[in-house]
Image 1: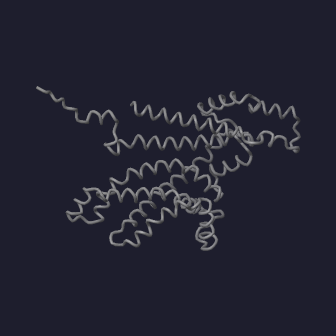
Image 2: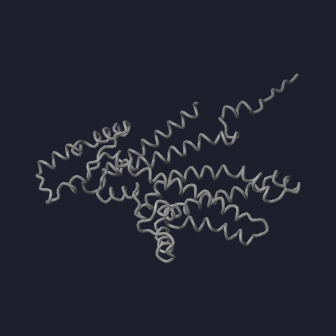
Length: 324
């Protein structure tokens, strides 16, 4: 319980730091979203009316008061109102987050499947040259920018081969290319960790014993090696899943999907700071929660990583030597 409470406290501290840094950086941005929207001559607002709007949005209060007001609002689930549309930010997020979560979940599952497939092909018994080719793929995938990959996939599969329409696609067709764009860069670090872990486990003495008994190489790989090599990749997968929100933002922008990505792009263009602050905290929360779950599951998956107290109890006691 002490370990769990400690990890929860660290997660809360990280979220508070993320909120504070995001608030300071957004306030330091040049320009004023309220002035950008309401100083338009076509609106015909007087300076007194603009001042009243600034007061209504709390833009004329000191920054510490704005920070405290925003922090208390976020703790209560109130993210404020969009400056451009006047819609509650919570309502805007509720409309776009489900689509982004579907894209992120499918991208993560596809990335894991792709990483496992690359790892298997990189350890093909008796086919060293082919295995070396697949071992070099993660280094290539990790260097591919997400936006560039999305543009290339659109050019090849939509415009050249005409296999997947990019204009008015169906529900399933509209997910194929975005999911692939999101999965390829994410799969690279997982595959790298898996390949390295498999190589390390293959050098353990118990693998040599199993091999000496005449076990099939595939049996050794699946039965003995995979179970011991999956834990480091599990940690990397947890870290990358927290970063999927950021990747989904770029992917949605490239493919014009309605989601957190388009909402973020519009908010950046219009300097809609309440929306940006909510999205930053949403991404930080996803990252922290996923990594917290991974940390808490580690001792369950590997008993050797249990609490320190258990290790101290299990350690042999020092024997006292009595001299006569």
